[in-house]
Picture 1: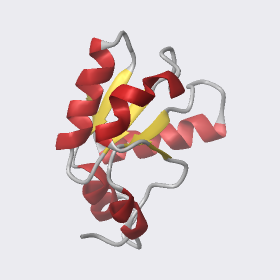
Picture 2: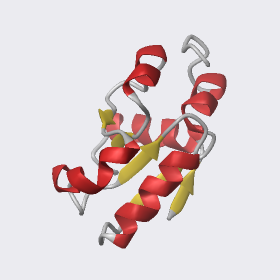
Picture 3: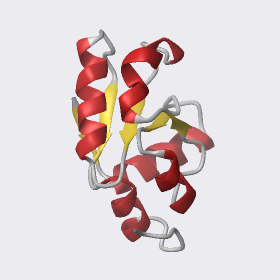
Picture 4: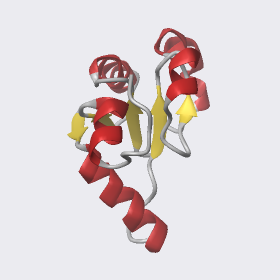
Length: 111
């Protein structure tokens, strides 16, 4: 599994938005619904970690996928699971949505 920092993800999203040079990643948030009510990266797809095994069919195996959670632990588990199922382009957001809020979006609520 590849690791990506909040800054690296922000740069990737900006690059994908401004040109077709790099495909925009699927932002897969694996946190629980109550957590999403507190803070969420815009454009994220939500599948709680416990539902990933039953819902992998909803994801494109060929798309770049960035797994997101609160601090990076659950998202790493999700990324490892996806890789074990044949997904090849999977990233874990280091420091999770908490790091995103602190480094990229200071208006986002932290918890």
